[in-house]
Length: 242
Length: 320
Image (cartoon, rainbow over all chains, first blue to last red):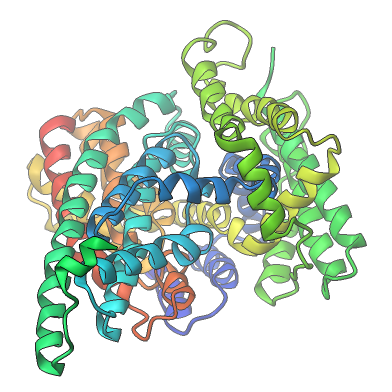
């Protein structure tokens, strides 16, 4: 039972916000020692496991290609493409983003999105703008936070439940790597990717529905705020004439 | 025959070349230690070939273990820095995006396309090492995409993609290494018997022969352990050794591919709910300047719980 203290090291490390790389290293050594492995065996275990899991880091060969394309305006072109999607409400826009993120991640293009690459510069501002356009007023701070949080959530849900439909992604390779070496199997990544599809569909339906419900929530709360503060709502006919 | 180890050597070479670039980059205040970190990481790739002994020569694993500890120290005590990225201006990028248009997506789509062709059509053709076609396909796809990308953009210097890729590497920093380290931790947990201990705990409470209880235990275990560890990659080896493999697959003859794939996805629901998964949940909150750093988690929580339910149902119906 004492080896379970290694799990505790990880929990404490993260609760006290230590550097995650360091936490993982210390937890590994501590668990090894508690499991009565001698230092040489621990070093060997670190080395062997690191060599066996090299496939997880292989995606780094993608970086030069994506770097080259970004330099030549890949992100700007993606922005143009999204801009052509027309006038959307915040919820509908985020649902479209969720779908795009899922599909591109399913094709292994994980780096096309992400909090720094797309959510902050692109998705969150567009969602806010869409919410303000449909609501007809400036977003109160609380709702602004909500829209931004949902923008981040669309990115995460799309990535997590899209990427496993791709065969050369870290988690699929981790499953095959772990099972094939530990249990001497010969699992194929393609089969694993197929089993991720039902969950991917559910993820889109559930989170997509919640994103669409966000529109109603925003509408209701913005109307309430407007009534409270007696902000004039813009005239719908004038708005349409713009 | 193209072998997977060649791909690892290519990856190692890319890291070493980028490390050399970093050593020359005077805008990086920690250029020597940064170069040491990425260079050492690059060298672990060909050395790993000897540790796995798959190419006819063997090397001891202990020196690699020492190297991994050195990487942990370099990353753990903030010895890794980044230089000023060498890139184009906003105007230049907008102009070139307007000029190249959707052609820019072609090289990006080449990578998955080649990987899928390799995995489906060329696997078993004898061209690739058996069972490694998808991974090798990714490498081949990247090389092909780089050539296509240079043709599409008209770029002639190979140093340009390498420099741009290095900037992305620097901005990711040690986070890039975390998945590989977490799988090391998972393996140590397995060797030290953490999975067995958790398995004993679970078996004490699990009703004998009830497949639904076992499915529930595996999925909830993956979920909770991921919440604690912040990463489904670390939870997977532990929970699979505890319940997934011995109970669901060996004892109940479940469909192993379905059990493992769905089990991992149950873990992903956990990632959506935990501040430990800082890169997905806390970093976006700070990037988006939210007052409530748990904003993204709150937005994700209902979806995550519903999806956990879906995965439990899928596993109960299709996998066992």
